[in-house]
Amino acid sequence: MIPRPEPIRQIGTSFHIHPATALLGPRQCGKTTLARFIAEQEPSTFFDLEDPVDIQRLTAPMQALKDLSGLVIIDEIQRKPELFELLRVLVDRSSGQNTKFLLLGSASPHLVKGVSESLAGRIGFVDLGGFPKSFLADSESDSILWRESFIRTFLERDIPQLGINIAAETLRRFWTMVAHYHGQVWNAAEFARALGTAENTARRYLDILSGAGIDAFRLPSSPGKRKKYSSSCSRCLCGAIQLPLGLQ
Image 1 (cartoon, rainbow, N blue to C red):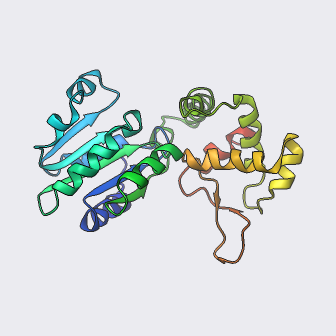
Image 2 (image 1 turned 30 degrees about the vertical axis):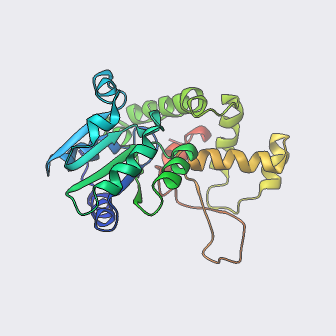
């Protein structure tokens, strides 16, 4: 595992303030590995909602969760959004007790909205970026192959699973344009003209990438400005952003 002291510190700080913390980031950024490392440091219970055994354990979620203490980790929480309201009840019951909840999921708009609404005032957020498997690959060519596979899976599987109906090739074209604009001012009108679409559609594509953790843009420091500026890809490796350009 790559040492990641800063997100560990951020999670600890969040738990000093909130009984629940959401660890968000794109697929394959290391959320599960980091959570399992944290779980080894203290009494904990781990649920993986991609594991049929854990899914079965949560068929009666109140019974499964109500008596747990220590750290309770639920991975892939976006797969069971119905848990959000139950977690609000459990978090309130755990007030003053030694129970805290670490929720792992993709940084999808639906997940962030569901958690924010159901656990308002009870949960902190920590963003995780980078792609350890690409970084730790045996060779540069292996790293490139991993990133190519990631982009294809992201466009062809992950985006549709979020309920977003956009052709993969269209979003790939937009991603390529984002890579060309790295370090430049975001101009929705220019993107819309190049794509042959409306400005609102171009902004929606940007929101999709940002909402899924491919966070290539940031707001300017001046609150009076409304344009978005390209960042150094704080959540993702620049290589993943720029790979559609053929940059290796």
